[in-house]
Amino acid sequence: MSETRHLFATPFVIDRLQSAEGIGVLKEAILAERARDAAGVQISNLGGWHSNTNMLDWGGEAARALAHKAMMMADEATGHADAGSASEYSWVPEMWANVSGQGHANQYHTHPGSYWSAVAYIDDGYEGVSEGNLGGELQLSDPRMPMVRMTAPKLRLKDQAGIAQKSEPIMRPTTGLIVMFPSWLQHAVRPFHGGGTRISVAINLVPARKHNPDTAQGQ
Image (cartoon, rainbow, N blue to C red; front, side, top):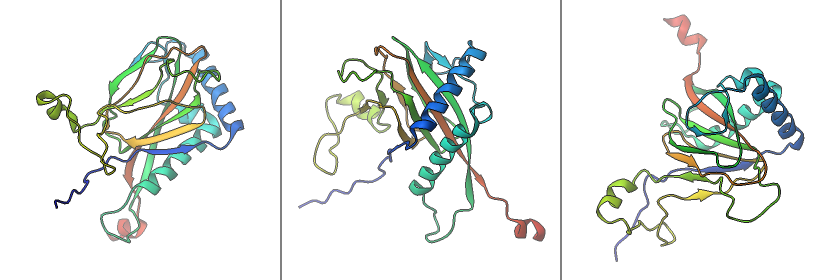
């Protein structure tokens, strides 16, 4: 009988923000920045407001705590090629906020130059409504699928449980959820139709080699 090994799995890390107070402080800071800079920037967002990427500066201690949370998640999910060796890399975070209303979305995109990307949901905007037709889901694209779909669009690779994999899995956000995935993974946000205001924070983590004083002195 043949043996199937599942290689090159794509990690998708899920966690929760534990401080309701911290979430509230982040929400206040984001709305204050939107009031200060109503134009924001236009990148992947289709409508809504996208802040500059300097949230670590204007977001205060709560933003720095969130970045630290993402870096801890990255540390747990990242190994070193030399088994047992302490990594010589640390993380340089970049952070921004998105505020979305009805009909707003984000088109498919990646985050070039980063290693990990995370999204934290400060307010899911659903206002407690559980219906599944309100949109706003995070949508991911299987990077292995395009060539397969060009020749046989209905075929799917089976996962370890023997179930056909989805080529575009989705996740419905909830307030306090934080997810992390490799920055090369294409992702989008479906049009949001909730009655509230969707607020999220995106974080890029770029690896940077740690400074080694002993090495520097020897050069």
